[in-house]
Amino acid sequence: MDYYDTLETRPPGEREAWLMDRLPDQVAHAQGKSDYFSRVLGGFDAKAVRTREALARLPVTRKCDLIELQKAMPPFGGLNATPLAHLSRVFASPGPIYDPEGRGQDWWRFGRVMFSAGFAAGDLVHNTFAYHFTPAGFMLEGAAHKLGCPVFPAGTGQTDMQVQAIADLKPAAYVGTPSFLRIILEKGDELGADVSSLKKAVVSGEALPASVRKLINDRGIVVRQAYATADLGVIAYESPSEEGLIVDEDILLEIVRPGTGDPVPEGEVGEVVVTSFNPDYPLIRFATGDLSAILGGISPCGRTNVRIKGWMGRADQTTKVRGIFVHPSQVAAVIARHVQIGKARLVVDSEGGADCMTLHCETQPAAGQGHDAPAGDLSIAVVASIRDITKLRGEVQLCAAGSLPNDGKVIEDIRRYE
Image (cartoon, rainbow, N blue to C red; front, side):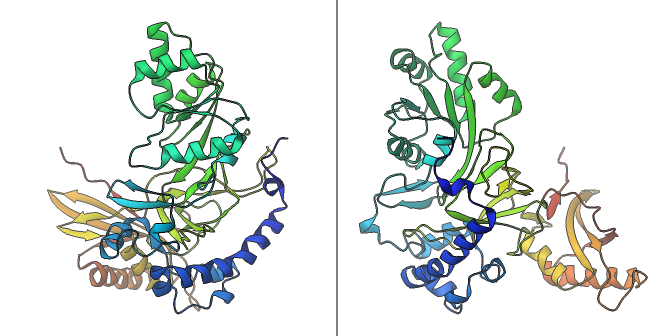
């Protein structure tokens, strides 16, 4: 069998209808079982949330807000639908941010990812993800067990002992970061140990540069990437085609303009926002803080779900100008005041030791106006909006539509401190 299940090869329209059919029930579940979503989504009719347009009208919950939310209502900020007493485990990510794990096998949905990488029942998996504080080790172990794979819980560090265990136990598969796999392979060479049993790997937690992929492939190891978070589990994964990352079947993904909840067109870089159908932790429009973009078309591997380009940077580009924080949401607020602006980027620089900022705006004609509408009037109005919203003075530079880079940046800090 080439696929984990038949969900992966459904016609895209069938999948979309299935997701939209489930969406109202999940919104209602979050409203009824989660203290946080009961408050945040209380004014919305869950039954009406059955299209992407309706979903886009719901507020975004940002990962960066979890620390304060959890301090106010420990341990999960009220976002959980399952009470603490009925969970399986609780983890801590840097911040700290506390993350729940519900009961049941492969709760984080990594089975599909490992299957796509060639993991099969009976393969011994050498798991180098941490089992301490963070969920990564358990994420992969639960999926391995679902596939029928025994696991060696190696955890992190102790490279000499890792190499010895691989030489002795001869695992077929590795899970962990790509950089640690490279370290293990190089340490094996140094010690004269045979680590050639490794033939397949799922890596996550950091980027997989082409040079590292080649080094791993040259050792006869097939390596696939997974994009996941401690809040959501798997978001997307790499298939045998190695062309982008395929979105997991059990989430609904949007790409929005940073600082807003507004979806961007296909191909434009923006922030990854996920709605999860997890009953224990029903995250509705959860903004990850990561940048990516939708890839057009269907994967050559035959899986028909949406693909993303992978991790492309961080969406939270908040910076401090003359002692005052400026946020992407403030740039969005400026744009919202002026219909002639289609897209904008705030460039922060330093002149003579003093901070300065310029809002570069792609312009389009407002309703009832032609391209010859006075640019000076718009510039003056935008300067006033910048000062009103940020409480800082800024300049404006108007530019043609499509001239700003497609990299998801709303604020670009080019100051140099030498």
